Length: 345
Image (tube, rainbow, N blue to C red):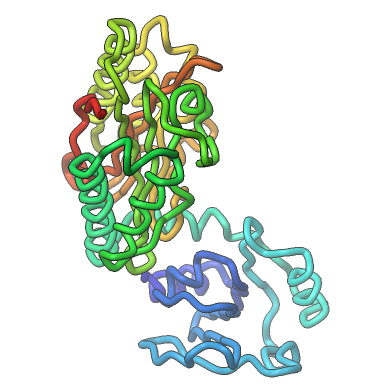
């Protein structure tokens, strides 16, 4: 993915070598492979991947592949390297120190932002893979609703297991640990799915599939029992906020404006919205574009991101609605499961 474009950037900026080491997600991005361990070296002229003997030696276009041997530090040395690009967000202190020993006279430059921005706008192949991941995710939810029974799904983990199993049976893996949060557990946005029994009230689901190295992310809500008037009001307000933020997505619009739109729609409940409105999705479940005010990001063509407002009432319940979206001239939801408040028994 965009390897030639990245090498052109290195040449323009006089960066002689980029060193990436597992688990840097950019190795997956450039190679479209997952290995148990790998080093990747990229120069303006070429790129090489080093894997262990425990991994299959791949054959790739524009990237040479070699087995990582003992004493690799000496073998990667190139005498003319004066400037090295590193991904500080992923490079450990151990490997940074190794690099400095190999190249004591070289200068180091952080290229984290460049790598993140490179991945922010998706290629047609990436879009296709994420769309497939979203389709599997949406189908998993639909099947859960079709088969839901409290006799079958007694605990949060029962539901998570069903969703994860469905995803795996359809050629993907869970993109992250599936969140199933019943009743007051749903008031914790990153609740760790437990053996808690399903109780009357909101049942928050946050899950996604990873298909061929690319992720999806979706949040939906079920209600076990009969919701109160106040609970229905909270759900309707949240859905309206999410829908309006999605509708208002436009080319070059700052993501912070979408955040403000959602919070305005939440009205008196906006103080209960305690996290970002969304995030980019790709080889990582959270990547660029960032919605934070500091990032100052605007919507670009071929970006894929989530919009996921939520409102949380501590020790009572919380609700969050989330879709993975593609902007390509206009906004399109890649996750298609119903957002109706579905009551289950």
